[in-house]
Amino acid sequence: MIAKTFISALMSAISNCSLYSKEHISVENLTKKSLSILNELLTERDSLEIMVVEDHLVVNKTPARNTGHHGINFIKRLKRKGISRIDFLKGITYTELKQFIADLSDPDKELKTYPHIKTGIIDVRIGGYRIEGDDETFTSEQVERVKELYHSISPYKGLSVSGLEEIVVNFIVTFKREANILKLISPVKAYSEYTYTHATNVAILSMFQAESLGARDDLLHDIGIAALLHDVGKLFISKDILEKKGKLDREEWEEIKLHTLHGARYLAKIDGLTQLAPIAALEHHLRYDCTGYPTLNAGGKEQHFCSQIIATSDFFDALRSRRPYKRDWQIKEIIALMKESAGTEFNPFLVDNFSRTLMKALENDGMSEGRPS
Picture 1 (cartoon, rainbow, N blue to C red):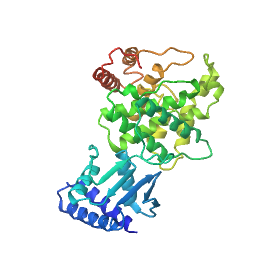
Picture 2: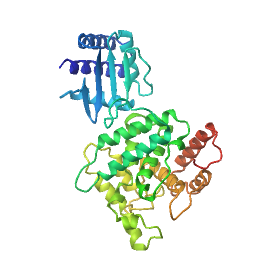
Picture 3: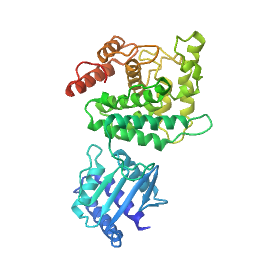
Picture 4: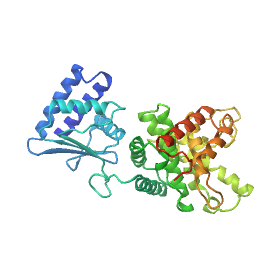
């Protein structure tokens, strides 16, 4: 299939551009080769359409089989840029394709507008390009996707890793264009929805923290996935205990604490899942000073840095969420409480960075009162 040859040549050009520069002779030769193949594909049609559906490439609405490591890496590149569809149009030039290759190879560059290359996001449930809505609509949609994903979880079947990746990519693309991170945090509209809303919020806050610390590409995505799944063990706890509106007794509290073990055991069995996911599920209540739970810490094992990031996000969102048995807190109150617990419950460096970057985002947006909208 000639389209597979094109994808292979294009991905080779992208890889070489990552290693060298777009002016390197190998990049120039591979770009020319890609363009030659592309023009051959465009002799009998006006465009070449490439889509990512789950973890598969679809070329001109036909699944591309056996694309090998080039196809796998191409899918990863597109997902990292937050796109799942490319249309190459007749009339494309060498200069245009070369710039597209350079932009796709650079993890910090956004894709530009190209005269003969169109990029977008596909929602396979409704077909076509996904239409961007306001942030509240967007986050509500993502909470629903997290809910669907959580509902698919059971001890007897796996987990859609590709579904997780798509949710995380959508988060990253959105918060990069939104200065006020709290506009992307969803309120808890019903207590029965708390698990999914909280998971969504913790993922957004954790990626916000990680990116402010310089995390990029695979690490940023892995932290997002781990944060989305940090409380997955609660799905194996009795609903009567989880949704109890009064104070838990000792036995109920001991059962709640088991969610860290349940989550880690479940996630450790999922093929293709980042190793950070079971670690964060196990450790997000372990505390910075090596206390907390689960009590597996006789050797003084330190909490993983990723778990520390997720723990701060978890605490922040839990306090700012209004639930039947507690009031919601103002942002400045939560930050003050986190600072009091810095060095014991939380990593003091992370608390300082989180509070500083969060308040800066709020000030830039003109939201200085400190109460979430």
